[in-house]
Length: 302
Image (tube, rainbow, N blue to C red):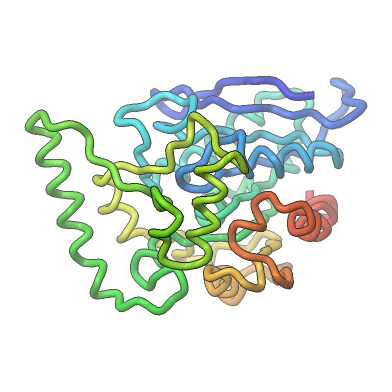
């Protein structure tokens, strides 16, 4: 059973889909999982797919559109401010705690791609997250500083702050909001196989959605390039952690980095053979492999 709901993050309305497990009984108290979507995505895509699958396994799940994105409110549209993205996770938990059938001591978070980085950062801050799962996790700051596959020179990213500042100055003077694509506009422009598959996912019938134009404000670069989703995980990420990454994903190194650094004494890393970064979003065999670890993980820890 799925229901469209809205909750608040400061002054913004956050649009979400709340899913209830089969045989739902309102007098019972259930474990719940917040599902966090990738940058440029919306709740109807991979986060919603994992939310649906987890609800079928007995969890209350909440997949939402980030503030400024999808059906949620906020201007400028498609702002990708990592600090607000993390606050969205805690606002989602705020909402779940108001539901009488949710056990407040059994709330977890699952993030995909950048959503995995944001969920990890939220778990560092918000101890109400009792268990953390990530799929194809991306630490956006690491990605900009070190490249998708960890081969870039960090010095090359310094100019991105100037781009963000110039965009803000122009917009303050009345210019239209400036945007950059989060995936290529054409498949042939992809810089690697993962981005070619991202084109297939976001810009074809595979998963295209009218609320997900796969772009972000240029001004967001200043926050993103200086951000570290894994900051202080060596000290504060003490909750149980299940990390899932594709064996052929260019971003695999970020999942391995999170696994290595997390303070948790209950942590596991699943590398799915043949999985690419995007295949973990929706390809049935890859999703089932991820769920084969995530479902028992959340059952055991929530």
